[in-house]
Image (tube, rainbow over all chains, first blue to last red; front, side):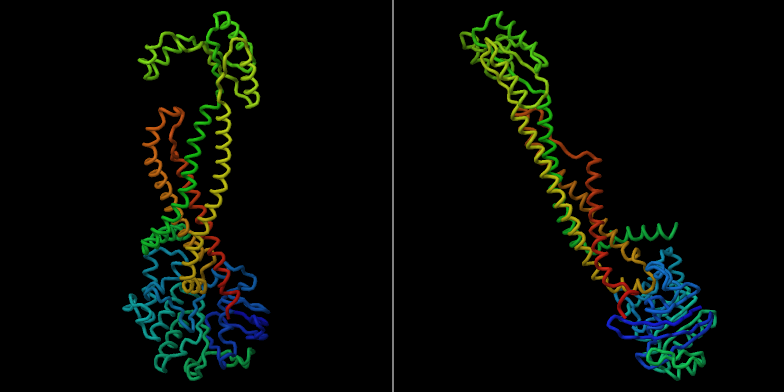
Length: 220
Length: 306
């Protein structure tokens, strides 16, 4: 489903975030990317989602080599991948409904279809009664859930989440992880990064451990 | 309905809705643009009206040939023969002194004064229509005719029509330069307005790009906003010029019969108005494109920011 072959990422200025990463995430798998902060977790996820391009090596997602795609083809591919941002990236000038509807409106979906799908997504994250709420009126956890709803509203085959439990207390974090588990159970490939060891153990999923931009170990 | 069509219809409707959310600002920018556009439109109308005078007069250069007061019928016949033989003359019409007096009585309010005269003070005359030619050729023909025996003087003011024609041509060139500059102004004003909107929506653009909006998706609403702004400005400019012409026309009507009967106040035809609106819309869209293009280069997600 997602294949990294000798992937390296250097940022302008010379910082090398990833070096020679070769690993694979199979379809239907749930994988946790772990490592200290600055180990390259976010970079790996952003490369997998086609938000950034590798400096070296190839990233192949659903059979497509992202390096070979043009800018707009890459953008269109991003629509098929749900991404939960660490900082949520919600738009504060519109309510929860309109935030979740954004990917569908970009794709030019008819209005009633948008309404149906947005409500289904909000229902899955347990925020159906908060669709009119503005992001400032939502708690951090609720904002996280809106972000998750936006990631799944397009019904992607791949869901990628960058530190989804980062700033949440243990109970809330657990409920978010359960949510990802439930998506995985219906066949969605889930790739999430975390530094919450207990969470990974609790999930019991495979892990990709990064240290200083290289693979530390790929064992569960 | 296809997604493509829906995206465009939505962007089109959304652009007007956006203008409506800030009616004051939208009205101001529309007015500024409409004023900028109405200037060359009015100048073009003025030129076209002036051009119609030049065209009406100058196609048929005319001379009036006055014979000496004591000219005999033989003299008249000789002059007529010479005129008919002249290659520059297309037609020569004899106006006898009695006929001239009748016409003067009929056309002016001098009947009483003329009746008081003991004798007809007017000479015989010929109205000569010349073949259209270069001013030098026309002047040569006038001098040739003036030298004919029994001819007193020749009146023919074709130089002024030529001069007018040249002024109109000059005016047309000046208008072209002026229009080009104002067209750039329109593009820049709209570009600037759109740039401000792009900057104010930086976050939305960034998030949209992250979740799969292409450059075209990001550009589309701004292009439509530029187009909507241009459309309103074009219609506004046509309305402003129509108002100005309407206001001037009554004065001109009062002025024209006694001065130049060829002068017809001219206003844009419907297709010309549509052309103005279309041009302004196109310019505004181009300005918007330029603005979005410039701003978007700064934040493409897959190219830069870590």
